[in-house]
Length: 162
Picture 1 (cartoon, rainbow, N blue to C red):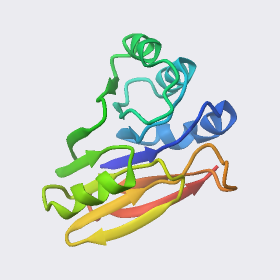
Picture 2: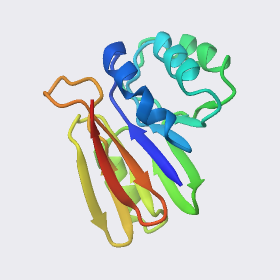
Picture 3: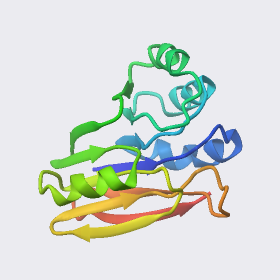
């Protein structure tokens, strides 16, 4: 299974639009938080169709109520709150926004893949049998706008710059 992981889009419509072809190639999408505005939900929902989109809250969601209301218009978008625990392609996956929490989840031994965001730094590390992973930032504040594709068969990461 191909999972596209992104984070910290911070209302950057231009970069989100550039990422849509990669998002459309996924069998599942994970967003690790900081969408910021409800219009990002509409852009994602209308852009990816029936592909399941799993989203956790970041620390910069401007209007969570309106984001949730927008997400209700798209059956494929699932808002998980602060933590998502999923099984995708046979892997036990945890998703949250914060690096420190993600590291603890990875060390727990309960997951095969742990995804996070927040610090805008692309990161890939093995902790035991768990891949701890930050796709970087879609925003491009620190120069590079990145997301990544994770293959659940071999847990290899393919980085994508937009």
